[in-house]
Image 1 (spheres, one colour):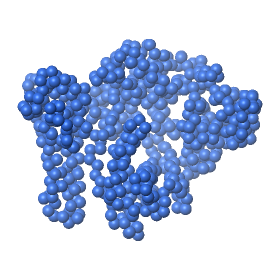
Image 2 (cartoon, rainbow, N blue to C red):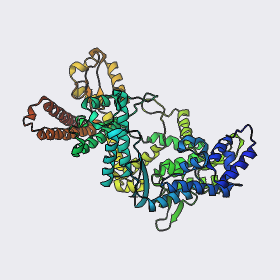
Image 3 (cartoon, rainbow, N blue to C red):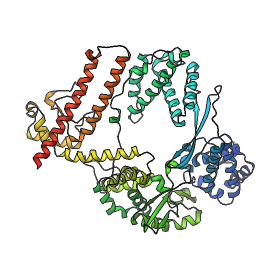
Image 4 (tube, rainbow, N blue to C red):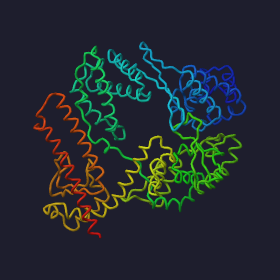
Length: 611
């Protein structure tokens, strides 16, 4: 093992040179940590450029021969430090992952594997590798997926291999199979924590375990207090096991007759997820006015993001030849590589306004000298002089976000609740989509422009926009809803000052119910709340803003009742409509419908009053 205290930097670099020539990876990996990355890469890109290029080709051949698809970061981490994960050495290497040789070798690996790969599914081996070609947005993409069964034991391991091999034979996607395996492994490992026994067979899992497991997953917390698993993720894991058990039951030789996961039902999971905010108009106007206070590169990148809806990684990857003038339409076309499809050469092309053209030309001028020095075609790069050593680095996206957020904080730009507005890069993308929706573009046109691979994603933004428009009406209706829907007994508990405070709390969202059905107006004089559900409570205020959710609840409840009826019929239970559990679900369905009719009637009445 070498020590930097006993070797001069020049001696280290000389030894590194011989390691590159001899393709001695093991020795090289002991030397590279002894020298600063900026110093190392300055030499690798100049005096040792030819040796380094050949060495990277050699390392690439290792991945290629193992049919291991790799990205630039992972390849560089292996070449320099022998690491399997780029994230382990990101801080040292993030300035250098745009080297041309890395683009070249990763593309070679991709092309080779695409042409020569076959699935490697040996039942005597715990590591499988499967691959697939997919056409996404008219582009051919190839991906490989590793399946590691080593953490499973006994018959459960064999059954899992059988099940996933069956899914593969039915042409299920590789990423779906990989996710199914991950779900099976997580549930098996968590069962070990709560039951103190290692699950070696599906026979060992009963309904009690599954109920306990559900509570356990919901209570798991990260160090910062956030939930480890969202309810939607828990449902996905339980669904995987439900399908796994169904498959085992169909194969009689497993001797499994009961599926404990089918006794768990998840209601209204979608209501527990949050979407990205868009940037309010007042914040956009403020940034346009004060953006000149930030560095020029931040001004340029923000102008591109807010006017195109590009992902930040896509904008950071723009090159000097990204602009092309279309004489037919008399406008500029921007060409870039979609970040979610980086294995392909095809570009995405969109028309852009003059503001974006100006921002790109400004950035070209700003980065011209450094691009000539570094022989890079990327626009958003800068010099790195950390520790007094020269290097080239990509701009850090977090730095850009921090600069914008510091500007918002400096001028105290707040949301309605008084908190400083928190800017995130993806907000620009959503803001552009909302703007296009308001301008009358249809879902397909927006999906094509914004490069959504699935139009359903764009459809979600459309639904959110309608919801926000309804919310504007809703904010004006709280007082009338309060007066026209709540019992007199409840209203009388509030004096004028308390009522004004209540309306303010409602508009700020602090009175929102846990389930999101509306707002609770419970006065302190009513004492603590003992209800488990807010639906049907006489202290609940709900308005037009919540109509989409009420309809969703109603439709989900209808579907659940259909499933319930089907289960009763399959079990030859004829008088199920008299069962208390069934009647309870019907009552809930009727309650949803009554609420919908009540809110719609109230909205119509208030609109008529305006006229």
